[in-house]
Image (cartoon, rainbow over all chains, first blue to last red; front, side, top):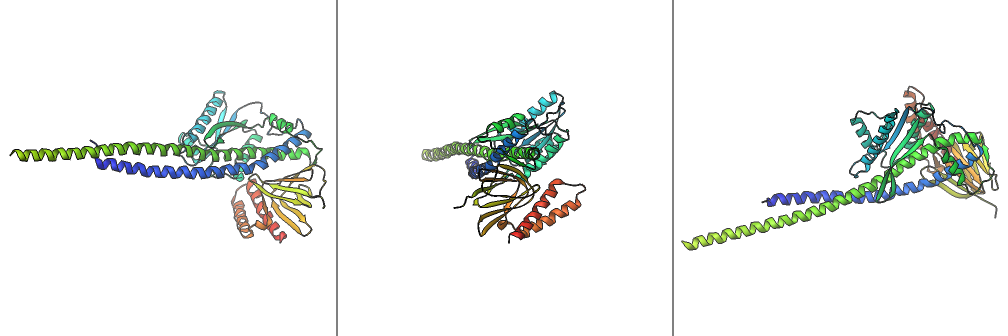
Length: 294
Length: 134
């Protein structure tokens, strides 16, 4: 027979946990909105940049640039794993880490060495615990990534790629599909696929004759690194929004589970209370009967 | 009414500025360029410096930028800036402090750090532009 006081204690503790999860759910909901707005306000820059890229590409077809070159030999790959700083977001981080492990295994099977750039405390902790020291780690940016953060990550990979220290670069992040759905995705960052430039060119609606200062080649040279930075920035922002989405879903089911648990516990509490009362009555009746017999 | 340009300054994070203008002056890589209505289509690299937007005969908006690109097409001027700030919103005190901090860091660094130098340049530009816009 469960003790009445023990059940009461459990109900109280589940209740206070529920209050926390409910608050976290509401906080996440508010943060999703802000993160979404940030993605929205970054769109004009990205769109305008692709337009410039398409225009430049028309004038420098077949251009060569270190970031466009596929290296003849594939010896070293780098994976940028974008996770969050905080947990309690369901499978949000484990999806990313699993996908990253998949890439590492695949690349190793092909005799390619792999490096990791860890974004978020979760990725940092995960790889360090497994004895893999990330070549670079970023923390405290998963909540509100800035372009400077993206630039710093980009400069790392662009430098190494141009110097042929790296032969392929991937970024793994959670794509923010909508408020309730996040999809972990892998994108190849470097080398930049030529189809990207070709499709940017195809999408142009007007094709005026442009003047370039100082020259189309010089503009392209600056534009490609910026393109990589923008892609990384986008991945960081998508991940920030997706994190809040995942946390909201996780906290919502935690709150629902707590409600269910409180119901079950309250039922057994009442049953135990009723049993105790019945027991007491039986004892009193029994006692009275014993007295009468005397 | 005279023909005007539409001037838009966007950074990777947001649209910073959006206004009708009579003329836009931007710091192209090999010298300032002035853009008037009916300008030929143009794409230019920008270096760190100031963008001046002549809104009407007695109003000019000053914007500090750390460089980027400008695209001109059919009376629409789009500046893609890595970083930009309206001169009226630059906090000179804070920029000075940040500049001093970064100078200190550069002195302590064993080798040349491009990112730190860019950062330093950006604060210098902000201070200069805030001074000139007054």
